[in-house]
Image (cartoon, rainbow, N blue to C red; front, side, top):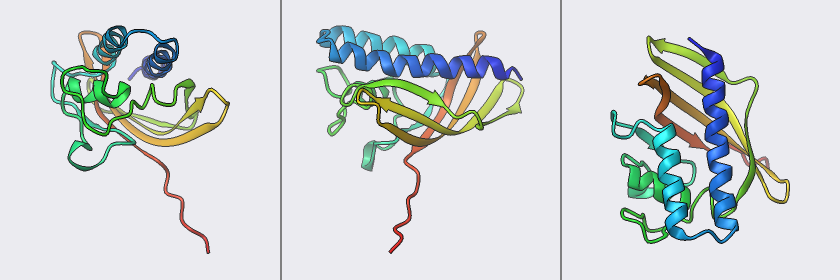
Length: 164
């Protein structure tokens, strides 16, 4: 297992999320934002190579899971007139642009089998005002053509019990 490669992959994934927000914030055309989302998804997810289980943080109902590239694009950038846009998607990376994404230093990274690695812990999204949002995640990576691609992505907001 090469933990360094997984950490580098996580860094480029975070940069991808930040970049989408920057594009939306700079009034880049929808066509260019869609292209950037497709490029980032193809760079980080295994769509087209195998099935992908993607359960994003802010997705519910019948669209809670995103088994297709179109659904993933919609989740990250919302409905910008692209094929497969999902009603109710506001664009996780573009609606409230993030200026930074960081993964916790204490995350667990383990090799499941040869060529498959799971990582889990917390990642933190910092918005343009500096406020940080903590999210829990589990990513499963598969090595495809020499690159670690996400085949499983589940994230959720941490449970906060109501202390009355």
